[in-house]
Image (cartoon, rainbow, N blue to C red; front, side, top):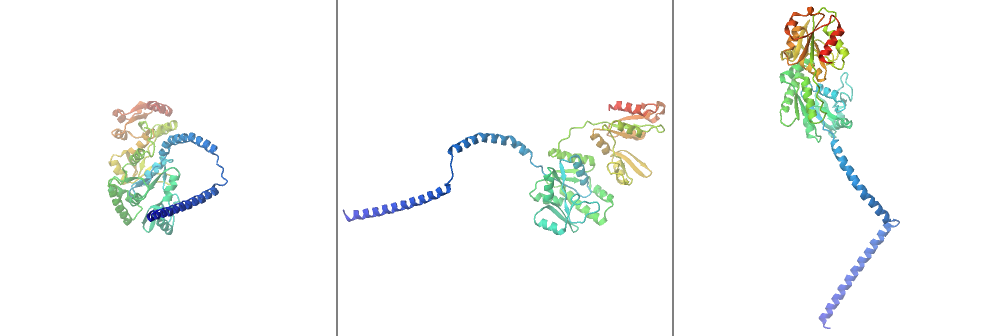
Length: 437
């Protein structure tokens, strides 16, 4: 063997020895790993037959689970929580009244978010009902911790809406209504909470000023500050896209219907079934008989409590202790009432001993929207004037005998003449038959 071949053989033998040594080390490591795994699984009994049986059962259950998921998926989507509603508007525009009407009609749908304040409670205010009354230190700390959705400092006191207050309404399954200013609405928009935004606008800036002055509760300095803030807020309402809806509160009932229509359009409340519009009935008659038109109206209301309704009249006199605004009367000022009479918003109006009384178109519409017959007691001149309004009505002139009829009433051809020889029951029956009550 030549030296060259010997060297090559020795190199190959050495390389092979190293390879075998490396393999032996790897085999030893594998044995060690296998021994460790035996220790881990020691005492574990594997029943292959049972595993196969469970697997077979699972393949039968999975399709049923899938079917159930697909069946209930639409319901889960439908139960998505509706967005809160932020209602803004300048002070004195009537936001609180509109919100109150909305919650009264839909008590199971809407919930009012109770705000926080650091000012002292006023007479009659209840904690957690009108406000959550707190301290400046506590509110400031919670603001720093990010627990408030929006807040503002006004005249040295904090006012704000906490996330917990919003969650408390949502926990009851209700849509949260927030009554806040535009500054607060801007902060809500910057937060992660999605909401719908409504702005309540007065018919004019001058009208808003008249409302605020009519309250008679503020100094001129405070009033001017409110008017300045109102001007800025009304400018914000003109920005495209900031508010989802703008409701003009010129006529309260019309404004409420527009607000409700927005809610219905967003499917926040159910669309009400159309109510059959009932006629307005005007009763007139001569004085001096043993009963009056008001007696007839009372008798009809007692006989048909679910079919008869009365409009709540307006008056400029001072409210008495036992009277409730909006139920006994709509209390207003002489100036405002005369302005609305001039604008044609009243169907009848009279001045008695310096006090003004009247019935507004809106009050009549409210009775009609309830599906009731609206009854009015008017003299002949007022009835003739009423017939020239936009309201359709049926007119009854009630008198004991034909000879007792008023000459002007006979000439108008406006009335259905009802005579019943002083018999109240007979008169009620005749009117009920004519109205198909």
